[in-house]
Length: 92
Image (cartoon, rainbow, N blue to C red; front, side, top):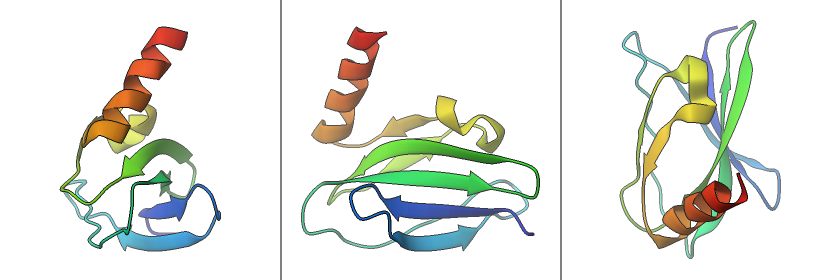
């Protein structure tokens, strides 16, 4: 199985999109949403599956980090994502 990244709608559990990962570990999704929605980015290879939740908004989102540790990626996005990260920090 080739390594892929999936974007899954958190509410409906529908896989919205998928993309292959290039040799440098880059992947790219493009699209528009009507309002901020919660999604999961799912990284899956032959022997590994990891997930990370993020808010998709009507602005550019940048995800940086290692795919092998997707739960530790850094997400640069809008207000909803920042608020969720602050809440998670407060709970931990």
